[in-house]
Image 1 (cartoon, one colour):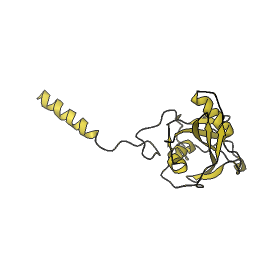
Image 2 (image 1 turned 180 degrees about the horizontal axis):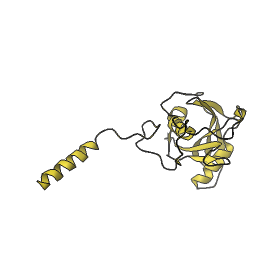
Image 3 (image 1 turned 90 degrees about the horizontal axis):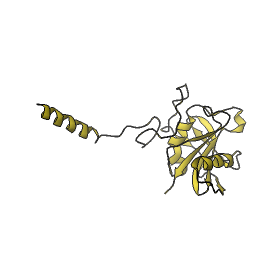
Image 4 (image 1 turned 135 degrees about the vertical axis):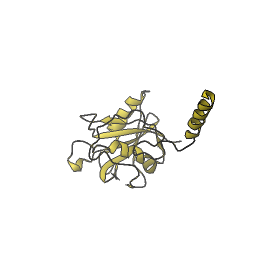
Length: 170
C-alpha cells in the first residue's frame, strides 16, 4: 500500500511539473520573480503591469560609455549617470499611464535600459511599481531580454529617481 501511495504521489508531482510555469507579478514569459528586486510594500500604484500597452518611440537613444570596470553595479551606476535626462537624449515612454524618460546605455560592452523621472513633472521619485512595469516592458522597448536585476539611483533606494536594467541582447 505504501509503494502504491508513493508511486501515485510521484506521478502526480511529475505531471504537475508539465503544466504552465507560474508567472511573476506583472511579467510576460518569465517563470519566476527576478533576482535583485527589492520588495516594495503594496500601494495603490503597485498594480502596474507589463500586460498593459507600452507607448514609446520606435527606437531609444543610445549612449556609449567607455569603462574598465568589471563590476555590473559599477557599470550600472555609469549607465544611470549617462542615461538620457532631456528630450534630445531620451524618449518619453508611457508605462501603465505614467511617463518616464527612457534611453539605452552601453557601458563597457554591457547594455542597459535606463529610465528616469521626467524633470518636467516636478516629482521627487518614480511611482511605486514603475520598476516592475519597466522590467516587463523590456522586450517591447528594446527587443532584448532583461537579466533579472534592477539598479536604482536617487536619494532613496525605496523611491528612486532613475532605474537601470541590464539587458541580454543576443
